[in-house]
Length: 188
Image 1 (cartoon, rainbow, N blue to C red):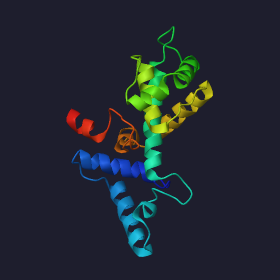
Image 2 (image 1 turned 60 degrees about the horizontal axis):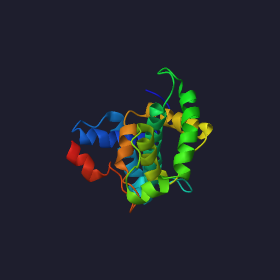
Image 3 (image 1 turned 135 degrees about the vertical axis):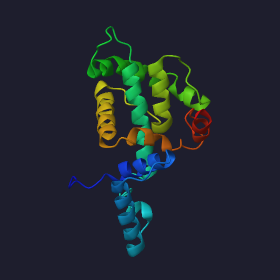
Image 4 (image 1 turned 90 degrees about the vertical axis):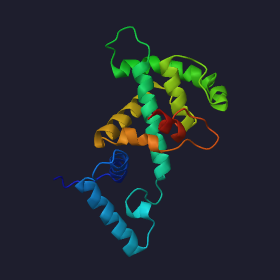
């Protein structure tokens, strides 16, 4: 067993995943949950804080989940970036995608967000639109897209449930998304 403490958000998402699949809750998740609940009761603190999900001066749990969800969509956009060769590297795809995202952001993105639907049919554009639902604006440089891709990979590797768990965050009020909870339940 590792001496590294579990990442609280990863543990929460694993817990939700196990509950959703009607699985027994794994021992590491049970230990994390029990310790956090005890700490919350003993110290009289908010359970999200006691479980390590929020820290003073840091992003809220909802904001962290929304960022993870946006990162997932931006990683998809990079994967869908048009390229001349199918074996283009991720960095090459970021370089190709950046000017496209910049034009989309400067052009029809605001209209699409108000309309609640993407006006273009290209897969990269649809993914970028969904990311913008959560971020409001998109990174428009190759470096910015690369940073998102690195963060997404790191978070995806730290927990098997993180990427799927990103879908537990609901979109901001008044911003449509095809992945809201009612659509998720209808498709399963």
